[in-house]
Each structure stands twice: as structure tokens, then as C-alpha cells.
Image (tube, rainbow, N blue to C red; front, side, top):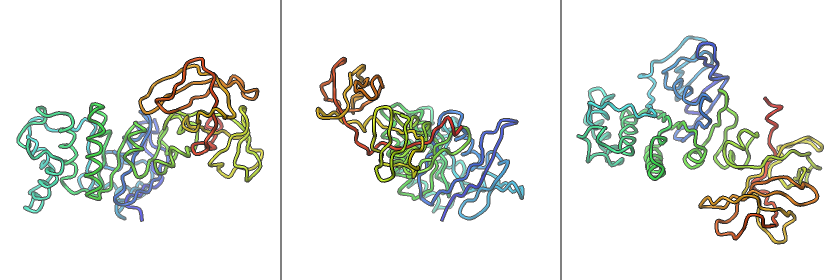
Amino acid sequence: MSYLSIKNIDFSYKTKKVINSISLEISQGEITCLLGPSGCGKTTLLQLIAGLEAIDKGTIKIDGKIISDKRTRLHVAPEKRETGIMFQDYALFPHLSVEENIFFGVQNPTEKQKSDIYSLMSMAKINEFKERFPHTLSGGQQQRIALIRALARKPKIILLDEPFSGLDISLRSEIRDETISILKSLDVTTIIVTHDPQEALQTADQVHIMKDGRIEQSGSPREIYQFPANDFIARFIGETNILSGIILEPGYDEVMTNIGSIPCLSMRNLDFGTDAFISIRPESFALDDQGEFEARTEKIQYAGTHLLIEVTLLNEIGRGQQLKIHTHPNARVSIGEIIRFRIVPDFVTVIEDGAKRN
């Protein structure tokens, strides 16, 4: 049963529609990421859930209780929604100590509430500087303070707007892991807004990709990466090669493209003879001296975990087609070298034609 239910909501700033008929169902204790480029509406959606903005259409429920309903003009005030929000800039009060910042939203706390909050502070390793002021602390410490302040009132849902974007790259992974560990241990329903695909894939139980105020695709990180629904998602979530083709006979799980017949893991139940596009992730190519494809290397980039090789096909079918290939970082490949490779279908899937769809 959904803990957060969003049904067909719209929202506009003056004449510009920012949220366009969005529906979402989020389970209790789930960590969800709203992922998309800048300006796609993900932060606005967070504000609508928090009650900082009022919807133009639709309904929002938390734990079965309606908190926004345009038809009945119901709009529960933000402070009564039992949501906690952590802003991108943390919004800490500079004139208050760490402890005062965290307790700011808790009115007349009981001894039990105090004990619980101090336990949270201990979990986040911020007890030792509770009497200091935010500006004297590092970005990672400020992030933890903002998180614990948002959790202090024991919200039903915690909303995090780009919570790691202000951190140094060297610190980001550590703080992200600590944050997810805290949220999981508390079993709190969480929505994280991010524009970073890797962050979404590494932190979320479910990912909802947004574009132009709509949800383009929802699914687990594996589903989103391995089976992108369309060209926008395929390119946004990671590097890929997009080829056009035609579906071959049912049962063959192959698409005929301009470089030949390509095996696909997902055919999306399209009929024989249907025009199709396929996404081939660079890791779907494996260097192989006996491989059916021959190509000349044009560019090589070292990326730490892999080499990114850009090649031009030399086969009679597909000659001149350029492709991106990932291979082991210790592979011995030179620019101008002739290589052979084969296709592993695990990360090959049929996708929608974005041009026709839009």
C-alpha cells in the first residue's frame, strides 16, 4: 500500500506549466530519487509535497490522509503535514548554535523527545560540536546538522533537495553513505531530488526520471539503467549508442540495424517489421580477437574504472558507423589500431523514438 500517493497533479508559475499531470506511488520506508536536468520540475514537486506551494489540480495523500486536493480546495499547512525538508543550501540559522538549530522546530520537547534527538545527533556524530555555530563547521558537518534538524520532529516523510551537491567530491560519497545508513536505520520514507544519475543509481530503491514537468520513467536503478524507455533517458542516465533498426521475427530477440543484426535483452513486445531504436551501453561491447565487428580506434579516454574508446566500424555492413566502447582500464589499445569486438546483449534494449513521441 502506498504511503505517499500523488494523483494527476498540475502546477504552474503564472502561465508556465511546471508540473504536468504527475502521478506517483511511494511505499513506506522507501528511498526515492527524483532525477532530472535543471528546470524539469523536481524541486517544485518536492515543494508541493511539503505544502510550500499549492497544487492547481489533483490530489496528494500521506499515509492515507489527504493533504492537498484541488477539487475540495484542501491545502494542509506545511507545519501540519508531518514532513521534514532539508534545503539545498541547508538554511541553518547563523546566530543559533548547532543544538539550537536542531531543536528549533520542536516546541516544548518532552524528555523522551530530547533523548531521541540526542540519539540522532550521536548517530550523525555531531554531539561533540553541539555548542558551536554553523559557520565554524565544515560543509559535511553542516549537512549532517540540516539532516538531523529535518528528522528531529519525526516526520512521516523526509524531503531532501540536492542534499550532497554542495560537498567536495572527496567527501560526497562518505556523507551520502552515512546519510542513507541513518535514513534506512530509521525506516523513514525519503524523497531525494538530484540531477546526478550516479547518485540516484547508488542511493535509491526507486528512481523517477523527470523531464519538462512529467515523469518519463519509474523503476529500480537497474531497470532504469538497463532498460531505459526512450532516447532521453538512455542518454541522460549514462553513455550509450543509439541505432535505428527493424524488429526481426518474434523469438529471435534481435533487431536488424545499419551495422547488422543486434541481439537485444528487451524487445518491448514490438511486432515483426516494426521500426525501432535500440540503446547499446558501451559495456555491451567486449574486445575479442574473434569478434564479428572490426573497427579502427579514433579516441581513447582513461576514466579510472574503464577505458572509453571511440571507434569507426570497418565492416562492409555499417562501415563508417561510430561507436563508444568501454573496456578494462589496463587494456592495451592504441589510437589508430584495428580491433575486433562482439556484442553482449545484457545492456542492449529497444527504446521509444523520442522524436516521434515528442
